[in-house]
Image (cartoon, rainbow, N blue to C red):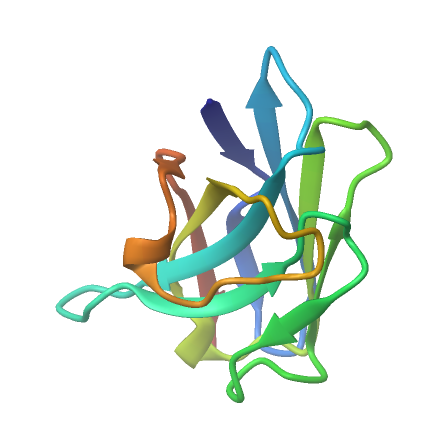
Amino acid sequence: VQLVESGGGLVQTGGSLRLSCAASGRTFDNYAVGWFRQAPGKEREFVAALSRSGGRSYYADSVKGRFTIARGNAVNTVSLQMSSLEPEDTAVYYCAAKRSSYSASYYVGTSDYDYWGQGTQVTVSS
């Protein structure tokens, strides 16, 4: 599965951005999806996860209530809606996918995922 992220950019504190992850040539029907981020000098960290069914989601405490992961309007996309952005949210954001036999499971570890996108930069200015 090839994943392509889009929607990153520069935004002021308190602003919003919507990231999109598109799967090339297939849908996400058989895949659980996650978003991760990596700031300079830091390890890649979990942000949000969505089950294969799309019915269950899970968030890192740092983004809970501000970010929303969901299936996109197109069957081969997953979005991450980010609001009330803070400078601490500045990072490269990565989409990841895992082929899953369990429709209700989500995954939070980087090693759980089989496929990764190239990342999209999000910069929040103070």
